Amino acid sequence: MPYIALTNMQRPGIGGLLAFRPEPARPLLELAEVILRGPNTLTTGERELIVTLVSSLNGCEWSRRVHGAFASAQLSGGRSLVDQVCQDVDTAPVPEKLRALLRLAAAVVRSGKAVTPDLVAAARQLGATDTEIHDTVLIAAAFCMFNRYVSGLGTVVPDDPAVYERLTGTLLSGGYLALGSVELPERG
Image 1: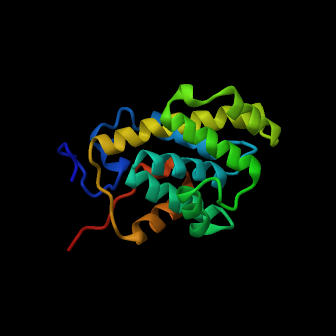
Image 2: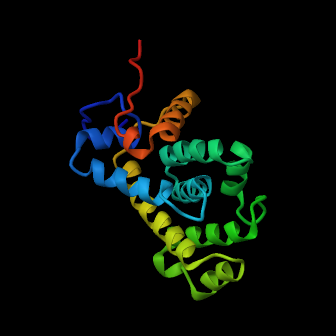
């Protein structure tokens, strides 16, 4: 149950917060659109996987579920791969470069200062570019903020997997800006 009286209880997760306080909604959704769907050598699925790991480590159930669904829909390993990464990055069946970037993201969750020259060098040695390293740290830092926003106000986290499938369809067809207006059906 949300900690504040949301104006639209039909919007799950961050959607209810954005409806309550629409002034920051567009810039926040634009940020997500740019860092997760904009041009990049990391696929959108890989970037969503980074978000899912960060959200899992932060204990943000909404973001773990929704971004896990987004990643699952865009990665060949699907839900199984996403779950394996969240359980143990070191044994998950991902390319070594991505594993190094996921380790960078996990360090950001602990603290920005936990990102060490050794972690960066390891990612670079495995083929990560400066842009990929930059974007991984930015994605992780931004989603630490998003996770704290969502968890800190106790947003609605539906149990029904169909909600996340519906949101995934909206994301894939219209991007993050389209997600800002998605509502749950009336309960009856």
